[in-house]
Amino acid sequence: MSVPIVYHHDYVVPLPDSHRFPMSKFRILYELLLADGLVTPERTFAPTLPPTEWLELVHDPAYIQAYYTGTLDPRAQRRIGLPWSPELVNRTRIALGGSILTAKLAIEHGIACNTAGGTHHAFANMGSGFCIFNDLAIASRVIQKLGLAKKILIVDLDVHQGDGTAAIFQQDPSVFTFSMHCEINFPSKKQTSDLDVPLREGMEDAEYLKTLSEYLPDLLSQVKPDLVLYDAGVDPHISDRLGKLALTNTGIFDRDLYVLDTCVSQGYPIACVIGGGYAEDIPSLVYRHSLLHRAASEIYCRHKL
Image (cartoon, rainbow, N blue to C red; front, top):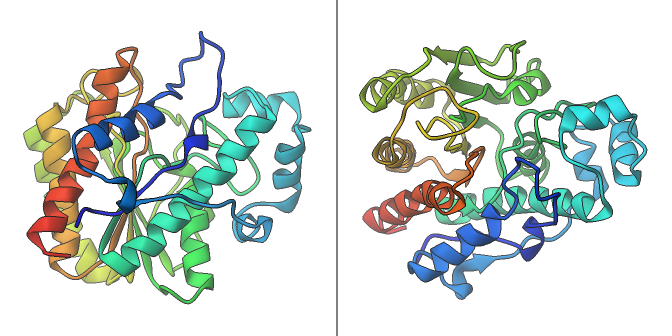
């Protein structure tokens, strides 16, 4: 039995050829996972569109409607960085559904992985940095509303601080936010997570993994979450266009393996989203994203989940 994977063909919509957001990676990632036997169609779960009321657990209703209808003011739209279209609205909503479904599956199976997600720069009333609505925050609140979890830990290892997530949960002790990110990178103005670990530019595998190991076990013991949401961004990679760290493929894989094993071995279910990753070499980028699913498959089998 393979680890549950969440995917929908609407994760990909057209963008201008010159746009730097690598939209095609979601489809190519799923195709790679199928080709390498890491997922089967029978263990692929397709999300549905979440009701607007679920988005309103996190986001301002006026902001939601303005985005749905394409009536955001130009400055707010530019801050998002993605050209508005009805197709992108649908894609954004189905990706939210994917992260919610991934969280549900993780609670049921111990581990589950989305093939999208990680929109941690979205605030309650605005989008930013390719992030429109915050899937980590919405999944957290929906899972709590459904009574499936009370305490949630968000482990954000994208190279950029999860500023939107931090701001959303600043006054909410039921969700603990942990962000380990490059200190001198977007966003220029950082928010305050429950725990921020800023990293020096150019940090390599060994120092990165040592730093992570100094925080994660204690965090789990302290928070004792009913669910861990893991943003496994691959933009700490040395070849990433928008990252400033220097992890290798081995470092990314070892990071994911460590996070997953540390959580699962202590009985904490973990829902994974792929987070950021930016490169002109799409096949190499997609392989980096697949390291999460390869690590999840190994841990899923190791612990006989």
